[in-house]
Length: 218
Image 1 (spheres, rainbow, N blue to C red):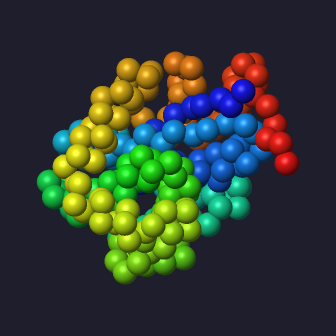
Image 2 (tube, one colour):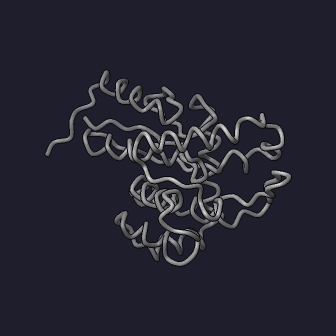
């Protein structure tokens, strides 16, 4: 029996990106399906978030994520540009977000087309791996969609022409997320049980094995 779990994902979350290779391995080895639930970054969802957060948190996040990337041999660099537009001095997040929203809409559209995780894996790599600058320009995201088995041009067009509808899908994911048991990302939910953080994937796999998770044949 194929088991299904949800993956609440933000393209601005380094921990979400760092989780993707592990989820890729999970899906390659086990008979499971990952449903991607795209959400906006918490900095966009909660106005004034960075003005209220403990000042120790941003430098710790930087240190912790680089350490995880090195331990797991995952290519990693803070994106250029940052997926959100934010004043570096005041930490104020701009009302208009021209980078995060288009790629988030593409992620939502990719999930509707049955290739949500495949796209997230490749698009997040383009954003976070450090292999490209200006990930939002040119055909980087289109190529990520093509490599995911999608029609990249069509998904890009859908993200633009159906922006309002896809934004509603993303907002619905954000509404469902706390009801699933947590507010942060990456969040995995299996049979109404939440697992928060890229360091809880082993716990997710354990829980799925208790319910009959099987190795993928072949």
